[in-house]
Length: 71
Image (cartoon, rainbow, N blue to C red; front, side):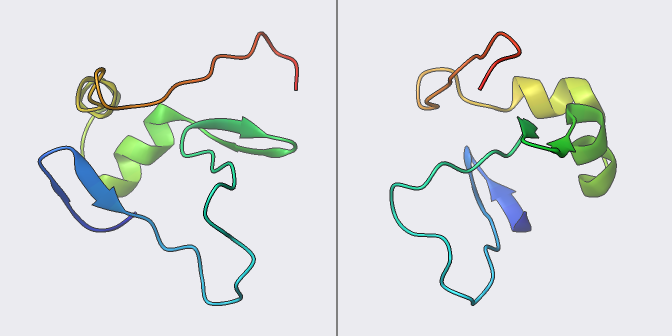
C-alpha cells in the first residue's frame, strides 16, 4: 500500500516492470502460491490492529473470493 487510506480507497504500488495489467488477479490479504500476507502483518505495516483492517474493507464495494484451501 502506498499513501493514506482515503474513505474506502487506497493505492497499491505494483512496480514499473509492466507485469501487472488491468484484469489481473491481485491478492492483498491471504495466499497466492507460496506467497502469503496475513491481516496481522498488513496491520503491523500500516500501524494499526487486525480488527481495523478487516472492518475498514467496505462490504458493499469489495469483490471477494473465498477459497477452501484450494487454488
